[in-house]
Length: 207
Image 1 (tube, rainbow, N blue to C red):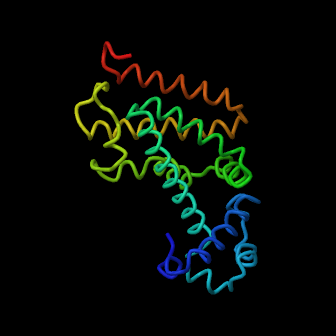
Image 2 (image 1 turned 90 degrees about the horizontal axis):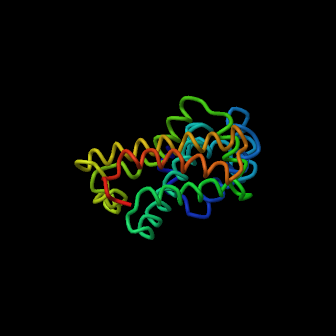
């Protein structure tokens, strides 16, 4: 995670470094990325970099956490739009997530992230896809989910549900890049799996 010196920078200076990092991590996988390229593009001394982050891995996983937070904000917006329908919201959010691979800003970053998976990356990305949702039972995300049609007992069970669908979502995102699936193929696979979960969770008599 970034050091306080980074957080104390002006927004412009933080963004300059972040954009330089995204550019480098979109050029090559993490293990090939060069701090020299990042600091050159950001126009900062090497010493300053280490005042902001421990190493390139620290910066990389900070970027992943930022993306996780953006993902959670999107989920909140979709849940509000879908009036708390969890399954409709998940499918809509998945559509949004895979659409990002077509954006110049994100496509290569995501491609290298998912194609060069390791244990730490997997834990960071899988856990953080819904990390903000699971911070506590009073989180905004959990509050927005309409549980009246779900066959669950309490918020704790809802938290477990979120973990399960988070794992399904992560697995499907990996498959998109590993197998170079079309959007239609990816969405079809995801909907099939989410519908299986839905069958097990939805109360009888609820459409």
